[in-house]
Length: 275
Length: 277
Image (cartoon, rainbow over all chains, first blue to last red; front, side):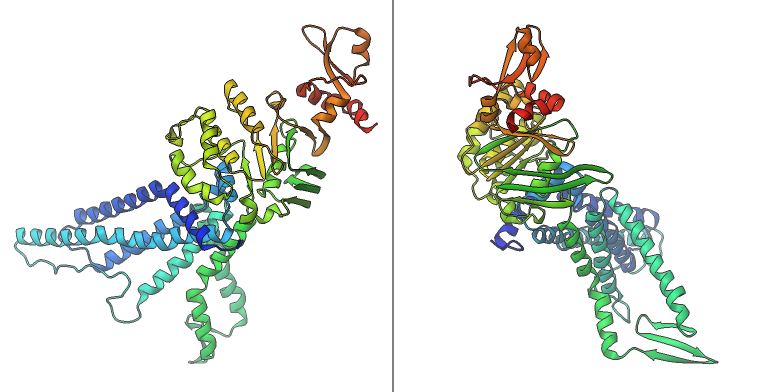
């Protein structure tokens, strides 16, 4: 028997997890859908003559994703904060990796897919409804209506320049993985404690980089984050570039390594968890 | 089957075990007795891999429990004092949990829950605490794991259920299984266990088989003042005194677990001297 990963055992555990949690999951998704409807209704109520812009749709999508996704990740190992549930969770004959992969499957992959589906199930009719309401109001007021808004593709930027939305998604995955780790590290109030701890660590790092490491640097500042530093000499400025290969590796790591790194830490913490 | 060597364990400032050693073999039902807070549950959790020793070794079925490997977990089952069962019908519980235990026997499970008067069609959500506990005990027994750990299993069970519990457990033991029952309700286990282990202040105060105890000690009611005075332990009762004396005549006497427990805790040296002789 493979003590680290066994596909059959993992699929059995996925079935067990779904069977025991499906009511909670379906209710949560219903609640998210309800909140989205409420939010769009509010927008139409206060600004009915304007269609819901793609910017607002994207902001709604990402704010909702960050808030609910991180909240959900912070309670994914909630069993561990409750003695009897923790005992049941730790003693079920499944490896730590399989338990973590199940949490990632439900909390990261399926949650993301379901949230996106729910978002569009609400977004599509609500944006169309807002368009027709805006048109009706304009007709009643005998003026030219604002152009109807399209449904936003929240993964592809409709403006020129870099596709910044991809960075939002990567940032979301990284931040959510911190909350996932927090759900194992903290016994109670995981969401708040992870939020506060994350903020403290972030502020400390900012302080350290700017005040401590910055004191060793010549006058100037980062021109491109992490890769190009601009030095001011007299009235001129010089750019110091990291070698291309280092920049590439560094940016790759910043984009893609945070979430897996925190998942590994969660795995190690889960292994040493006691009840 | 279970070997504990020089176990040190504590919660922050409070030390529970300081060098506890114990060996438990297959084919026995061990009664782990002790006052509240002496570490009975902690010891079971160390055996199950829910808590890790600060020092020393715990080996169960040749595994280090702290690693919680699936091969270990599928051959051990714990019925904790406070337990959790998901809000699903019994049928679903069996369907989704039993496959993790290769030796699970569905017929046995049916027999046990019938013995406990629980209809299989019931949903766990609608059951009382005692009924849920009986389902968990039945499930644990039907898993046929080599090690079965039970922490205060009779808590929350009514009088009838306690006797059903004894009957069911007694019928389950075989030479490959080791059942460890921790309790402070000693009367519930009197006719069940075949080895008594008493823990106090993090150490083993007493550890003997029931056969040895009844062979060397006599538990009876006495009206003889001389015998009462010379008894290893005595406790006044409504009629005469309940005493523990040396079993010099070799008569079979019925074990009074509660009396023995009190004697060990209050006058342990006198009792232990009988076994050390």
